[in-house]
View (cartoon, rainbow, N blue to C red):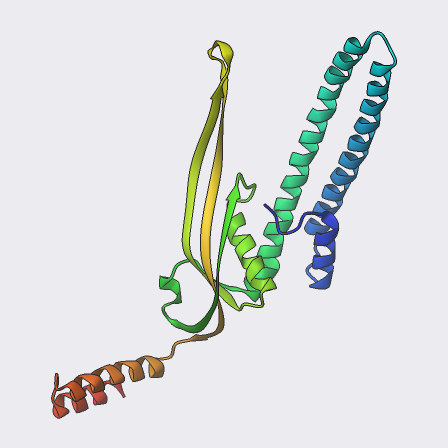
Length: 233
């Protein structure tokens, strides 16, 4: 649910395309710091558990050691979870900055088919995306736009976008249970190239061809065709 997975990848992309700013430099720094702390804590926790397991097999108090390991690991797990959430928020801000300052200038986005009616273009590929519980409400458009950029498209047309709320739950013994609600979003888009705005001349030629075909079929007279030709040209 992000353009890149690691802070280093964001840093390389931002430097390569010369879109550095105080905000994205700060967000990269904070997310990379969170990544480092998470790695240290995971390694430390693994060593802690390995040492504890060794103690379980070499002590008569094996059960007690396991309980001790479990409960002392809960705060560590909670801290790691909070760091992951913090990193996700910083990454979401980086995605939005890349979209606002780079992708919108490289990719022409039509949010509906109707918006593209005044343009001529070549369709090159159909793409789709599904995301859940995004930090950015516009994340699916950001990732479709980035995919369009990586495939060297000039623009994209959003042909379908649906957001659903999905609730899942389970019931345990005693009637107790848990319920989780997530937001799932699906979108489909068409990648396009050679985008040109229609001119009145192009439109008029299309209309003239239409009336010419009617004349050939005998649906209108020569005089009616010439009158329409004068109106258009």
